[in-house]
Amino acid sequence: MNEPTVQNLFDLTGRVALITGGSGFLGRSLSRALAEAGATVVIGSRDRERAQYVVDELPSPGNATHHAVVLNQLDESSLNDGFTAAVAAAGQVDILINNGQQGHALDLTNVTAEAFNKDLQNATGYFLLARHLRDHVVSRKVSGSIVMIGSMYGVVGSYPDAYDGICVASPVQYHTLKGGIVHMTRHLAAYWAKDGVRVNCLSPGPFPSEKAPSAMVERLKQKSPMGRMGNPYELKGPLIMLVSDAGSYITGQNLLVDGGWTSW
Ligand SMILES: NC(=O)c1ccc[n+]([C@@H]2O[C@H](COP(=O)([O-])OP(=O)(O)OC[C@H]3O[C@@H](n4cnc5c(N)ncnc54)[C@H](OP(=O)(O)O)[C@@H]3O)[C@@H](O)[C@H]2O)c1
Image (cartoon, rainbow, N blue to C red; front, side):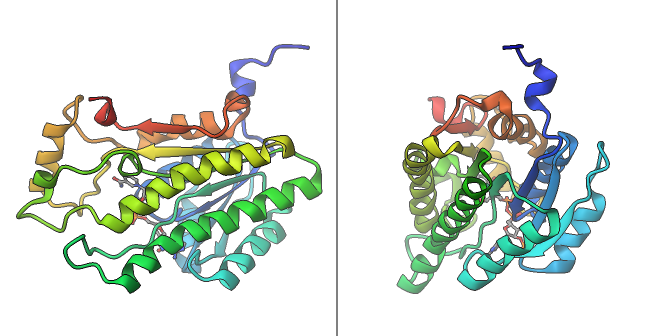
């Protein structure tokens, strides 16, 4: 067997990647990473215009045509229609990035049962989309790759003093959700390995957007071994490693990109 080069391993030319939440703060960088690596990218959003705006800005080094689809992961029929529309637009889907996130800014002091259950439904959406990808690639007799976007808060609790007096604490239902997503990854990876489908989780540490309260960000920096927050582009390399042939022997893992947050 000819050994593939590093360039071959990271090249996504000819592959189609569907990403949810591609319009978001991290989703825009993740989408660009997929496009820069040569993939055809399908942006899923609850709003077609928002998705199209991202599509229009994506690079296309190999002249791939990118697409926008409407997809609400908390609505089963929208999720089904969104996956079908992605396949119809791009002809196939080989890679799924479950990145979208809808939640309530309510913490353990005031979250309601209804809000808690609704937020956990994001995991249901991640699973249903993952199963669509698995069934689709199995029917085509090709391999597939799924990345769930988790969080360091799926692995460790948050420091109460990081938020106290500034904003709501990191929501209890978010910790429950992300812990579930990390573990769902392992379960699906074990069942689908023989189908040629790899499932991994990419867990960002602190990547606050410009909307985050600066006083909280200063406190978070004190908690980080590297003493700084992440830049969205710092997720690009890890994502492409996981979805491409560079990660062909990696499945069921949770890769933390957190500046060392979970190391002490
Ligand atoms: N930023 C961080 O520090 C950080 C840290 C750890 C983990 N994460 C995770 O990284 C991911 C992206 O976070 P972000 O900071 O980029 O958040 P963001 O800017 O709020 O983006 C979230 C995205 O989710 C999409 N979305 C919301 N509800 C949806 C639904 N019902 N169905 C489908 N998509 C939906 C939105 O897209 P539309 O409005 O276009 O539908 C939006 O683009 C999330 O899973 C988050 O938990 C972020």
